[in-house]
Length: 255
Ligand code: BTN
Image 1: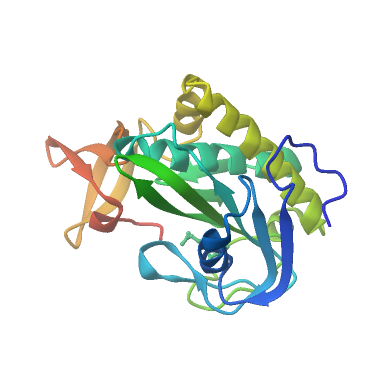
Image 2: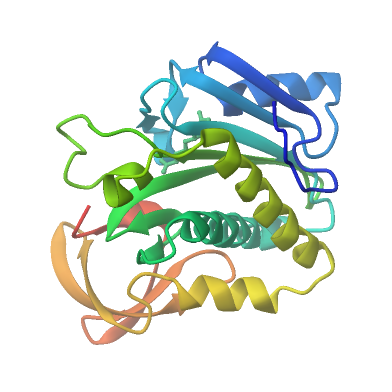
């Protein structure tokens, strides 16, 4: 299983499956059995992996990481949930950077991880509320590690750690590092020390304080990235005005 896991709680309850439809779906179904905080479900193969906005996540069996983590951030109110997205992205980015020390590893808003402007990892966060507070959070991560070929529709926009570096990585060693980094940043969040998360997110946010090309209402628009709102909206100066967008409203032109 995880032989060198250096965490206090995250990943201590670890379930490794050879095949499942989706680790996020599996973990969400497991909630009725009250699994402990920090439960991690990993699958060698996902038959129906879920991506953001109703898309699918494809990953070659046994080559990559597809896993989900369970957290109980009951200290966060519903309108603060985007900080979890930042936390997960910052932790995952740092873990990838650890193994690719010379690579440009960036965060694409809201929480994709890029290597050389290509997507190496995606994060799908699913929250359950109790009243106005968060109850369960499932953080699903798909990280391309040793896959060398991608389907034609994503071959120009996807990358793996091996494609970048030529190195064949140990999937479980990378998982351990991601869990350690996630626990570290989650601990900061719990303590209310969000500045490090906010700073790291902006430090590595692709296009931050730069002009990027965005597709807004089917039109390519040069946009200056001002920042990210507390609710997660991207804030840009475009067409001579300040505009805020949800993830569904814009497309990055290098998608
Ligand atoms: C994205 O579209 O960028 C998010 C992709 C998230 C994929 C991961 S793979 C493990 C977990 N289980 C799922 O069904 N999806 C997430």
